[in-house]
Length: 234
Image (cartoon, rainbow, N blue to C red; front, side, top):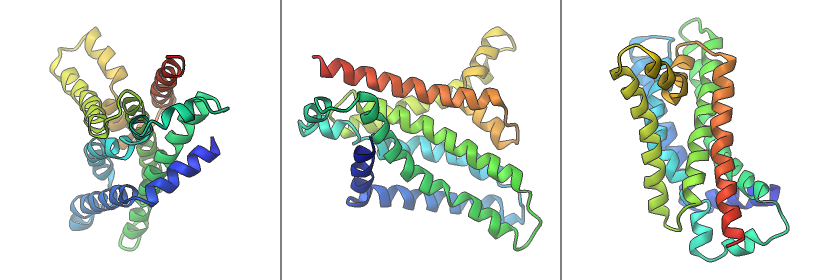
């Protein structure tokens, strides 16, 4: 797993992809920080984290689009699939490499807290809570992108497919809001990634939300392993 992780992480920095993703992350988070905090003198940066949901649902699929589709296109996937390493190790190595790039981007978020502390008293608990929430959200988006990448050899299709699934996640929240109060709305609310994430940005961090995010990540990683399993024995 570590060898795959190292190889994939190196690939992000020997191509423009890793740098482009980080540049986009820093540009948008910095812009939102200026708009919602610096320009109005506010220490509440929950809106910054909430707006990053939209940015990440678009750009994380670009980060993950090549993870498995490139191997399939270059016909090197069979070498990997027949190597004396478990499929879970392959999937986890690739997942952690993309997630590491994402985490490097997220590392800038607490820095904004230090910037705010130069002109006001800052409450650090919401900042750290939101940062953890963003890391959990990124885990879901990366696992979805990895799963879609396992289904095709076309990187563009993998990126579009990942974005489409992420868009469905956002639209699920819109559908929930359009429904009358009742059982169906409660169900959609409980499985809505956006609802769970917006709760975290509002300062509501529960064990159930943590279990929910980790479970969704696990489901998509499990599905990715199953896809590779099918290809290994095809």
